[in-house]
Image (cartoon, rainbow, N blue to C red):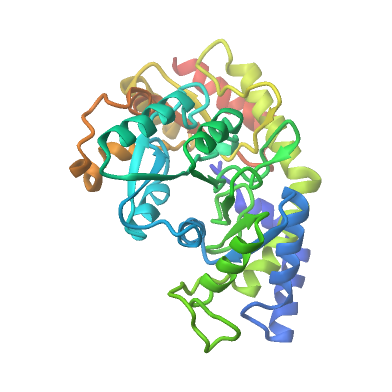
Length: 374
């Protein structure tokens, strides 16, 4: 059993993927070829964003957004503590300071009240200027933008949506990758829409931001390649990866998103009275990058994970330590327990196999194994 079965997906899409790769090899435009522009156009159509620029990976996408917004030394960027390292790491890479906020334990996403508190505390201290917030659409579900965006606007903060895991999610029909001043996503192979290597994208409706990020992703170019008007990055999506992503995007839209929700619903029916299952608010649709349950504590979680492994069922822990307690961020001075729900989630979460090419029998087997061990 695979945690995410990319080989089965490839077998389903083999003809289309191989055809796309062959076309790239024949036309030889390996960098910024026509498939890249076609993918960007289709990503705009799907998400409802005016502009899309693909890039080398999801981390670069976040850094490009921060650079385009002029964020740097002396600025505070608010980040949920329960997420992957790159969300905070990019803040340091541009010279700014991440300020961590807690999550809502039900959704695993940024808690608006904790975010507001972190902003007020930063203003009171006066050593950093609040500049932006990076809500994360964790595990496939959009953050609470209906509450987060008004708080950001009240304090004059930019909103950068980190939809690395959230691609395909939505709130009342509005798609992930369309909520921020700039939104970002990742095409890492394990993501809901993944390529066969690294890849990412930035999306925006702002003309100026689009022009700035177009320059930043190619060494800060001006009118042409050798006219450099700013310091930028070398962050382009390879044409072959775009050719792979196009048929994957078509499958995601036509069937995979629906299948992810089908298997998540089956998990929920089978497990709802046995463990704490994921919570999806009314009007939200998740793309189920992960199906993550909560156990009573780390001892129960680790014991269950071991038993499932013995039965050939793979699981993962995302994430075993919140960012504010990572070694690199200890100098910021967050004491253990200061962001309690981020710490609690790290002790209790367990992610189960989740991908579109599961079967009913597979979900039943996993759920039965969990129930028998609790």
